[in-house]
Image (cartoon, rainbow, N blue to C red):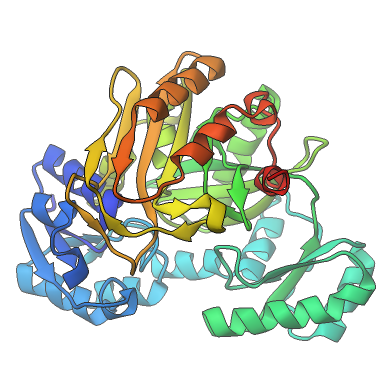
Length: 449
């Protein structure tokens, strides 16, 4: 049993983890930057440690400061949340070195799945379907172009260490390949310190569907169903997530759950993870990547399955078996999550930090809001602009859409600009309402402005 967990994160996910610790009778420790000294996660935690000021590299990304804080307060474990150090294998090794449990998978698994070209090869060997493309890494445009000719255009050029849409370029023809390869490789080297690339067939107008898995240290792996994350910007999830996906059939769902379990077992996965697939317009799905952490949108799965994934993460990290089996997982109803950001959609989604002068959050049966906001809180400019997640659950998709419209109608955030109106516009869009939105949906509606 853990007695004290340090949360190496901030904002709504830190609040979420602190509340899970409270429910388990475990003391929590918040780390924070000077900019976050008045943040809700700092106020809610049992202990708090300031770890610096300024940009994240000085605090939430500073491994040594976080480990020192954990040792000084006597923390048994560290929960990384998502982002920051959550998928940093070096940080996991540092935790191991000092006898602190990292609540997540092992460093070797994070490395294995973090390298996208290696992950592709691993999935191929495990008979998990992958997008047609290179099995080995590519280091120069000339070699990459030969592969592209074999695969057939258009192709996607991707950084092996990439993520968040960085180090990615589409080449629609041979004439475009060399320039786009060099641009993607340069961006990868600058962002990740790695110029290893791979090439795959570009699937036009796909859906993005992911499977949530939980695995313990005894070889048990359970798939908790899918989330549809197709409404995104610049290859990044940014707007809505929902479960179940309106894009797949029951047969596909069973097959994707099966392949997600195969993927997890292929790398001896433990703790929470997400196996991400893309689905082409014909209904064929392919492995894309595996996120080796809890996801922003984990609440969607919690709403339809009745599970608490954060508590389950902590239990697994303590060496306990999963509290449920595959037979116990029976998703019910429909859940939708809407990400609320402090940004100005009309100005290319420019961040809008500032003081929250008035706040009213929606509530009611089947309405959940994960946030660290309160009236008087100053949203800092140094970090991500996501300030809340509104999640609704209803018996079916139409009812869930209406409940989300009602929730956003009720939500009031004064003092900063937000994307609330933009989200409401999506909720009224016929293409989205009919469940037909793919990864190009946002770009299409923005072009109509």
